[in-house]
Amino acid sequence: MKLRHSITLQFIIVVMAILGTTMLSIYFFTNYFLEKNFSRRLNNRAETIVAWISESIEKEHELDFLEKLMANRKDQLTGEEIIVFQLDGKVIFESTKEPNTKIDKRILERVKKEKRIEFAEKDLEGVGIFQHSPTQSFLVVAMAKNFYASEFLTQMRWMMLGLLTISIIIVGVIGWFYSKKTLEPIDKIGIELKNVFPKNLSNRLSENEKFDEIITLSQTINHLLERVEEGVRLQKMFVGNVSHELQNPLTRISSQLEVSLLKERNLEEYQNVIHSALEDISDLVKLTQNLLRLSRITTENEELLAENIRLDDLLFESKIFVMKNYPNYKIDIRLEALPEEPEHLCIFGNSALLKIAFVNLIQNACKFSPDNQVIISLSANENYKIIHFKDNGIGIAPDDIKYIFMPFYRSSKTSGIRGYGIGLSLVERIIKLHNAKISVASEENKGTKFSIII
Image 1 (cartoon, rainbow, N blue to C red):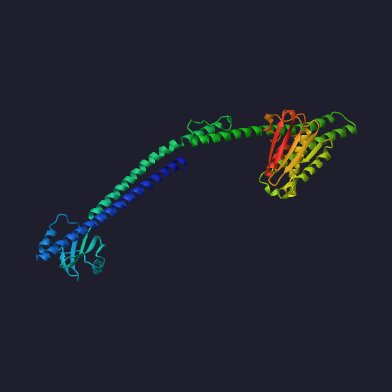
Image 2: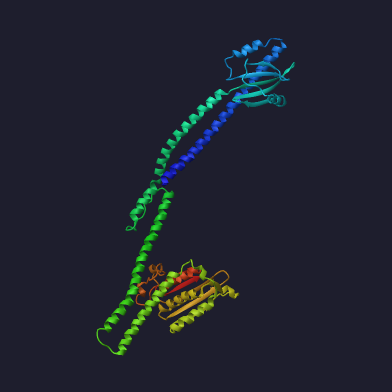
């Protein structure tokens, strides 16, 4: 079901529920009022008849005149019957010569006991009254058909049904145009979005001056479009960078092999070509391995964090690993503000992955520093652990800092230094996997400091 249809239907249901509840309340209140009014009229007639009968008995008048008077009254109720009984059940007066209803003795017993009752007999409504006079007591039963109320309520039901039908039509039309007016801004957003994708990512949704939910939605979508545009731009940059990084070693291998085939060479020259090709192939293998690691590490791999790792020991292991491959690197580890309890130096994580992150940060710091030196400082307490990796290298330009964790991104300053731009991306994912944060502060030509807070 379309949203416009749904809104119209809900609008009709709500309004009809309110209108129906109001009509039902009016109907039942009217019915209650008519019944009480009819019962009151019956009661008044019964009391009047008893008063006349008491006066006639006291003055020793005949009741024939009273019967004729009742028969000739113009305000009689439909099917009206008034019967007066003595306490022993003997009938002393009947408003009609041929009563249609026979009074059950149980009703008379109830009248004696309760003094006044209301009852229904077939399609008649009635009241029973115990009337006491100085000379004699009577039981009076007055019955009649509430014809006026029945007719009135029947007409009222038809009228309400007609009004309800007309109201449904009117409310449906109003709801249809109301929902159309309400959804116009959303339809406009849909049309504008169709014009944005896929070629005009720089376009944004228009924002009106009214500050309402629609403008909030437009602003949210515009923020999302900015992120999508940035993501597409970074994706294109990633594809370009990875193509370049893969092309370079492949081109070198191809060129060396082609040159070696131009003429016959001695064994040493062939060996040099093979060694050079193997070196480029080794670079390709490292590149693909790093890409594979990068793809496998996500924040959903929390099952990998199962080891209790002591950070100072892991830093020294990383130092030893780097020094074996690069003996000329200078790695200074400083333990600052250490806790008294050794367990406060420990975290739950994956030692192999954290070692990869530490090794990457150490190698980058040394590689981009003229003196090949990095200073590592560790401080910890029971709440958090902080590790700084500081170098005195070329630094990072402010415009490049926001891109350094993107795979294959390399600034113009580092184009002459061997590397692929995957290391920091790998570091960031490993740190996030351990629910930690990594930040960078850098000043060009003065150095860079990476900080990890766990």
